Every structure is written in C-alpha cells, then in structure tokens.
Amino acid sequence: MMQKKDIRIAVVGLGYVGMPLAVEFSKKYDVLGFDINQMRVDELNRAEDHTLETDPEDLKAGFERKKSGKGIGLEFTADDSRLTERNIFIVAVPTGIDRFNNPDLRPLLGASKTVGQHLRKGDLVIYESTVYPGCTEEDCVPILEKESGLKFNQDFYCGYSPERINPGDKVNTLTKIRKITSGSTPETADFVDELYASILEVPTYKAPNMKVAEASKAIENAQRDVNISFMNELALIFDKLGIDTNDVIDAACSKWNFKPYRPGLVGGHCIGVDPYYMVHKAKAVGYNPEVISSGRRVNNSIAEHIAHKVMKLMIKNGSRIKDSNILLMGITFKENCPDIRNTKVIDIIRELKEFDINVDIYDPWADKDEVKKEYDVEISATYDEAKKYDAVILAVAHKQFKDFDFKKQKRNGAIIYDVKNFVDRDVADGRL
Image 1 (spheres, rainbow, N blue to C red):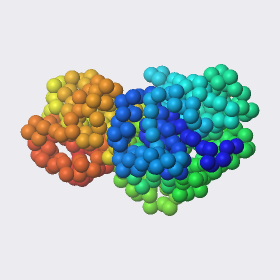
Image 2 (cartoon, helix red, strand yellow):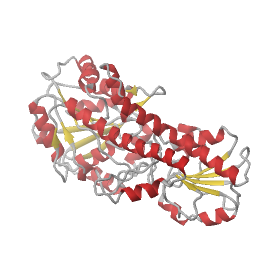
Image 3 (cartoon, rainbow, N blue to C red):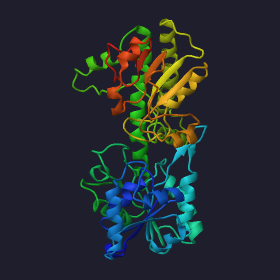
C-alpha cells in the first residue's frame, strides 16, 4: 500500500458526513473536497457551512495549510477532473429511500461512476455511506471496474467505514466517536484502520470484512428504531388507558437494567431510513423481517396519532376544526440542528391540513428556502404573538423554545400538546 507521504485524499460528497471528514483529514493530509453542487462548493470556499457541522475557522485553517506548501490542507471543487490527482477516495454521499421505501442508491452509484472514471492502479476507494450488507462489492465495485478498466483487489482496493456522525452534537464529534473500519484484503484493512486511527482520539474497531462493517451500521439504527417503536406502541396503549407514558417509563427506570427509550417521532437520515436497507436485503435472500418491519409501521403511525389527538383535545376544548389555527413549533428532525432530512413533523402538518386547519410553522433553526423546496410548506423563524391559536404543538425541543410563553397561549384558549416532554406538565393538555 502507499506511504503516508504519498496520500492524496478526495472526499466525495460534502454534506453532514463528508465535511467533518474533509476538515479532520486535512490536518494531516492533502485533501480535496468534491461535490457536484457548485453552490455548496462556493459556500464552503467562503468558509461558510449551512449545516453548522464545521466551524468557519477550521475551514480557514485548512485553506491556510494548503497554501503553506507543506503537502497538507484543504480545498474544494465541483470539477471532477481534479479527482485524477487523488489516490484515496472517501465516498460520503447520502443514501436514502424512494417513495416505496426501497433503497435509493442513485447518489452512491453515481459517485462510484465518477470515481471510477479517475481511478488508477494502486488507488483505494473507501465508502462511508450507509448501505445493506454486500452493497459495496455487489453494486459499487462493478461500476468502479467498468469505468476504470481495472481489476478489483488486483489494480485497486476498497474499504468500508460506516459514518457515525450525529448532526447537531457538539460533544460526540467525529474524532471522539469510535470508527469501524474494514478493507477488501487484509493489507487494505490494516491500511484503512491506520488511516482513520491517525485522526481519531479514540481507538478504531477493525471488522473482519466489509460486509460485517456494512451490516453493523444497518443494525445500529434498526435496533434504536425497534426500541423506540416499542415505546411508541406503549404510548398508543397507555393513551387509551389514560396513563401518562413518561410516568410509566420513569417508574420502570427504578430497575437497574431497564433502558429508558422514549416515545417520539422517528425521522432523520438514519433511524427512519436504515432499517429499510436491512428489510430490502433480508427479503432479497428470502427472509421476511417481521420485527424490523413492524417497528417501522408503528413509528410511521405516530405523526397521524399526534394530529388526531390534538384535534380531539381541540374539540373537547370547544374549538372548531375546519379553519382553526395551530402553531407548530419545530420542523427539523431533531432539536438544535438545521437538518430537515426525513423529518416526520411534516406528516403532522399534512394530516392537519387534510382537515383544512391553518398551520403556522415556527422554527428558528430550519432554512425556509430548503423547507419550501423539499416539502412545499412555508415556515418562519418567528411567530405572530398577537394571533389567537386554537392549539400549540411542541414538536421539536429547540433551546429557543424554553422562553416561549405556553401559559399565555393556554390562557388565550389554546390547547398545548407536547411531543417531547418539554413543556411543564401542569401546562400541557396532552403529551406523547
């Protein structure tokens, strides 16, 4: 394998996963960040990052290292011809699902095609994108071979190191999270492991092969999905019994080995998506994964339950449903983060609008243009304090909402529904 002084890295895909990787690797290596989105590249070249996953000063420092002539540092481009200069390609493009909940590998396969066109003898391609077990060798490698004319594990090699980025988390950052590594040959596995170990503050975990590494990522999030679905199902049961779910969980936590998962909306780029990759692969080999599938069904039903529960509370409060006004607080998939990918809050909004309810969406973190483009709804970073609302739904626990006067809204006749166990319980009329 190549020597450290010969390493020239390209990070392909500059989103929530690729950007932190590019910054950290640029502290020790020569890194080229590549993305097909020219606007994204222009933003980063201005030392700006709308995802808030990288600090502008870190970007500027990376640029300065590049200018120093010491063979390390960072630069960005949307010109794929520049990839010819690189010998290690780290692919960190998104892998989502289509409208039928099947894996959408188009970005991954497109990135593989682009990388393959610039692949040369001795090069290494490392995938970080979440996939089902076997995807790297079965789907990506044939494209790399076709585009490059090279032979896998003879002329070029592959590795897989699943991303573990937690958007918005400023404590468990890239260098502090243990990384799983793997390679297509034992020698490649050692090299990939040493490469990642060189930028981490914690030990790596070298998997026996790439398929194991791929599977480990898929089940990490499938496990959380199933556990949360259990709590969501309990929440549906306890609602019918008139019991507060969080009271039950708090009581159960008195036992030392009870795991305190909480009910809630399950969206985002991982937990609401990755289980479908395992379902897809399981069915492909002739097994119907009942537990994973049922967990997905339960979690996908929660937004509708919330919308219907709010309307029942409104009716009980004497409010009409048609043409009523609801203030919905938060549209991102998690708190204190601008990430709107696969947010399940949109399902609450759509269900309410089916009943001709006017929904004002208040979120100081989300980008209104991005939300409009992705979901075709209008949002605001503020709300109309003078407007009379029939209900207020706290959907995302942003820190800015701590100062919101829920009591005032309640005095003005609004019912308060708390999805996140965030509002004082003597104020909330209902909570999940």
